[in-house]
Length: 455
Image 1: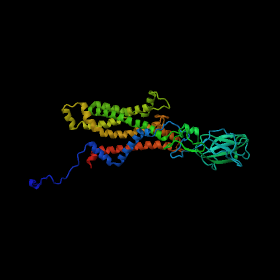
Image 2: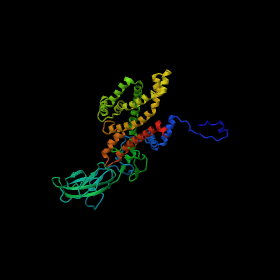
Image 3: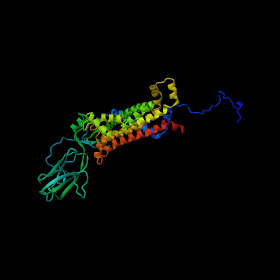
Image 4: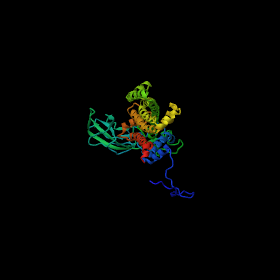
């Protein structure tokens, strides 16, 4: 092949057009960030994680509602429930007098409210007594009358006042005839009742719903406290409890992985660099820790720390996670160190007199940070799920302390009638675990140098 002649090349002048043949030089982390931004799923997951952290840290400052405060007028209310209430007079005892005339059969003696439902009826055919029932559903051919409220064997006392846990909505009341032995006979009447939410002026003032000098009075409408995500079975605000539960769940879910990943990184780097019998002995100890049953040690730690039944075991759970979950990180870092210690720059550093601590801290551990970061993002959802599972079975955070797992345990009891009490904490657990997993996948691809070389 002929050598090129220098005369064939035209030198560039100051005004000549130049062409860049290479992209600007980027650091390892700059290039990783560009690659991460190109991954839409990972970037969206990163935004979700940031939003969850803001929800946890800044949320209580914006929504200053006590998560333990009970709103007894709004128990197990789903989001979007009508908050209107009518101011009525204070409760007065009732002795069967009716505000209606010329009404036969089972009927309301007064308008039905959350304060009281007052019923009157005539003697049913063949009845020696009557039993009053209440149901949330219409009475079908199976004659499921619902919850028995009272038995009355005096045919001169044909009235009943219901004040048992009344909430706004529709109820179905039934009066059933009884024979002298108290057995049901084929005679009954049913009425559909629409219960209206009410409150007294004194209660409204005490709860801060109206000012003490307000002109609102009997018959006026007011709005009860706002609960954007509804309330639980004790009338506690779901949004406030989700924020408080996030502090517990994310504290364990992020704090424990951060501690055991750091310990595993130090342990694995030491074993990989020292090598030989020391490495073998340290790894056999790691294998022994892997074989220890987590749930058993969780129980032992609760006993050791004096955590009794029904008490929250946050600290024992944190200790158990840190002491038993580090071997996976140690193995991964050890494998990376075994590769790096044979590199030429390590040998050159040794020839220049670098000590072992300097080699590990300056050269080896920084080169494993990408792998460690990916490991951390995968360890966080695992720890969050572990906390939720232990709290769900009663081994972790116990009521009244909120966490997403304990809230799910409480919500599953009423999931058929009030599903929002289970859906919201379960949704937060699912979204958090999914976001961290997708973020971990994106970081793994962004920090993998081999993926960069394939582009």
